[in-house]
Image (cartoon, rainbow over all chains, first blue to last red; front, side, top):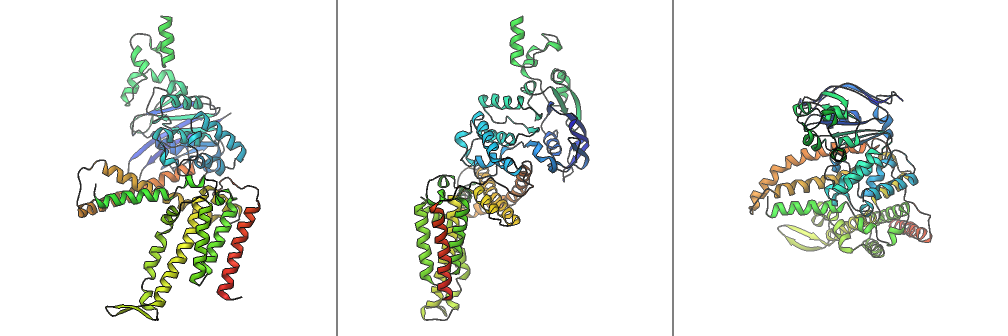
Length: 264
Length: 270
């Protein structure tokens, strides 16, 4: 299988002259789990929109599945979840919002209904399906938005800060859904705490909107000087064990830290 | 921002936001809720057409009674229906108000050189009632049928895609428009203390109007992306909620057909 997304020298400037991303080239292979990290204002969301074909970059191009540069032609294979769930939930009920994607993209009603039931159950939305989205809490909206993007089972997921205001219980459920996604996943986030759980490759965007590092997850999350230079902090477990163990041994997650302590 | 003006802006935006969601009534098991959305759409459109064809006050009043009966059978509170339907006829009434002195007829009232005639008053009453009953019928449809089901029914009835698209997008953006207004007013209120005078309230409202316009445009753009991300660039194609037609469906459709024919007969005397 070849690359699902190939971005060539993407640059995007907003009308006020702000350059959000600059010369970003990125190749995403099928099945990869990637975290795109960067500080606030580094251009992650703009990059997500450009990769998802939702804005026209000022320069550069994106090729999808080695077939086309027209995102609309492959819209049913791309799942783009925007940062603010309010921008994603525009129907009169949560159910209508979750089924909007499958209906627009021509999925059968029966298959979509089964998938919506599964997602509603996993994300605790069953009792909220007939309520208008604006009456939901922030975390509920986020869960509804996640269900909306997963409802048409896209091959490639591009999700911007999917955990937002979600509580601990549903946070785990969303992480499980992302981990178990059988296709390709790109998660755009400034929070590194959960990155080791969902990504095996990390792309770091600097403040000037260009790629400053693109390496396996452990190499980037244990590189404190790189992260701090670009306004980021390593996961808490890395900070805790820094200087106490070898860099290669630094635990990235709580379970790794527990295992490390147990072995000690 | 507090005071009468801000309170009104908040109340109106809240009410209008509610206006575009009727999830509780649509979930009831009333007459219209149980009908196939295509039948509801055709029947209500037929009744509205019959109202528009009518030329006598008695016929309009009859259709008014039919509307109230449908609302009662569909468990729609009359206050809610009236609230949703009142604005358009009132504005229409203001537009045709000059007719009360322009139409020739028996003088009912005279002042400042103007004479209000019985024909003018009759026309005003007829016009406002006719618009009111028509709007109430359409409100009844929107209150009792999920909007996506109405759009799907339009599609299956082969209504031109462009028209369906315009209706679907207008409806969604109207909701977002008032949602954004309410957010802005709440954000302002959360950082204001004490009461302000009526004039100061107006000044404050004037200042946020520009911000509101920019925010609405920005949100429209972001929501547009949210729609495109899930196939929104394609014609609207919500799932159909049609069910096998039963006797009640045919009966309602027959009533609508009879209403059109009856209204035509009364109008043209066929």
